[in-house]
Image (cartoon, rainbow, N blue to C red; front, side, top):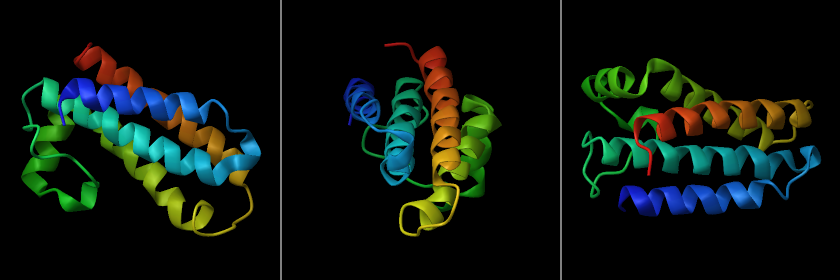
Length: 124
């Protein structure tokens, strides 16, 4: 996917997220993770860090060398924010732990950090 295609998908997911309420925390957490992933890929591709044939998917799928590169290029806060969103998924998307509405708000904060950073690095 090209950076423009990733941005378009991220924008579409973001529009969908705006229809969710805090009670829809499962959708918010999942949507935040998906949108964030597209923003990260848009930035990595636009900066030439990765090719359009190689998408970032999950931090645990990258090598330590890739992690260092991505942290250097994106800023370490980006992948940390993404990991935090992912860490909520087992408990609030696949599970029913208490506090889902608070977690949904946090996921949106983390998504905003990722989106803002990606747009700064690779405006499009």
